[in-house]
Length: 405
Image 1 (cartoon, rainbow, N blue to C red):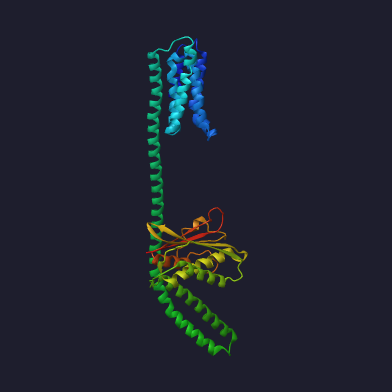
Image 2: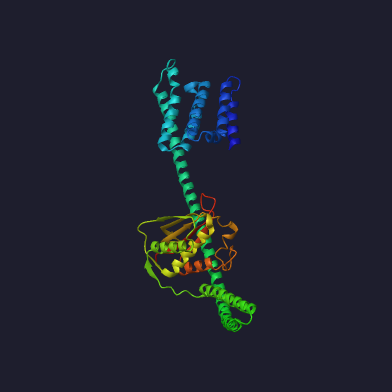
């Protein structure tokens, strides 16, 4: 397009070049402005477009003045500012700029009337020329307006498709996670049952051995005590395996989430009474009731709050709990957002954090968040994590969605 502009303007400048050096320089200025117009507007984003139209009107007037004034064959150069205004502005502003352009052209009539008389035919010719200015401005403005609307529709469609793809990817990830949880749950259930039986035998034998050797051999008695305590720890792990693998028997009742979240907060605070954590509650009003198993959901939120307390550690921090109505995949419900100011979760771990047996803690078996995810899935809800927290560069945010139906 820049090459075409140069060709057109060079062609105009090449006509009668000897006597009209001012015309050539003015056309050159118009060409430079036209080629670098968008860069010029970028330098003056608020008024650059208006300045561009004004400069083109001035330069077009110089060309017309150099080539015969009101009788100049170059009067068509005024279409350049007219078209520019039609492309940059709305309908009303385009008419105003076109009227200004027409006035600039008609201003050459003033010196011409000192020499010539305006005949009816001349007045008609001038009227026709100016009406064509308005006609061109209207047609181009309408075309540009429809093109803008079409571009806006394309942008909205692209944004909708991007959001749909994002939701689809999220649904697929949740589906894959549920499938992994189901498969590992079945495996864990079988292993847990097989391990629990010999554990009972080992525990009973160690207790009997401890009773018999308690007075005779202190070292052997101490070793028997180690066996008993480690069996108890293994039994706790097996119990968690079963909690993870056992099909949930939900006792659903329609309840408000806020009181349940408050109980979970209190339970977490009781576990970390010395933690310097400032809790901020942001609960929306008029929240719908949700069908849920209160005990299991309280376990979900207690686990998440304990993780947040542990992440912030002894230095403490801020814990923000936000409850609001939300929509997910076309379903209405309630979302609970739990934001802490801890160190956050590395990006490479975000996709694994809900997997069974995945943990970053020195102690623990990595089933806490897996059980949380399973309980939420059993409620037909969803859970996701974001880290770092938006705008802070640290912390994590867990979002739990529970459908209202």
